[in-house]
Amino acid sequence: MKRYDAIKKIVETVDDELIVSNIGFPSRELYGIEDKNETFYMSGSMGMATPIALGLAMALEINDNPRKVIAIDGDGSLLMNFRELVTIYAQNPENLIIALIDNEAYGSTGSQKTYSSDINLSKIAEAIGFKEVYYIDARETTADIDMSKYKDIKGPVFIQIKVKPGNSDAPIIPLTPSMIKNRFMNEVQKK
Image 1 (cartoon, rainbow, N blue to C red):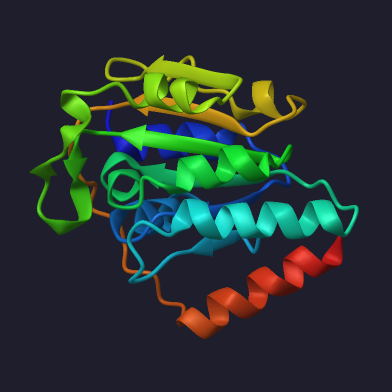
Image 2: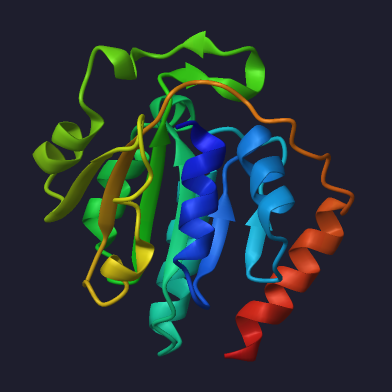
């Protein structure tokens, strides 16, 4: 299975969680599968989906709104901003789930190989101190991807989902960055 299949299974198993999606093809694929006001599509800021999700999760905890926040990130993006895992561990947001889709490639920039074929990102998250770390091998099937299993776990939760490289024929997102931001902010403020 590829990243598209993993994202599709994630979408099928979420409820009202807020989603921050990695730039490029992951956001385009997510948009093509199901466009929702609860989704913030990143554009032009590689390595920042998880930090933005962290800030959102922390803000929701402060305001007594523990709504879950899911970062759909990629191995290439995480490796470009690796210190984010240390910050997440230090801040310890209970309502953050990182769904790291690991295709061992920079999928949005030409599928150049990343180092995740040589290192285990789940083991690194454990070494940093994450208590809730999960590894799902979805290269052959997405049957084990079920985000509802993590909804009641006090996070932060780190889920590495290993998939095969490759992009789908995903549509261009026809929303401006302002439109994405405004509708997402309206959704966040509803609950």
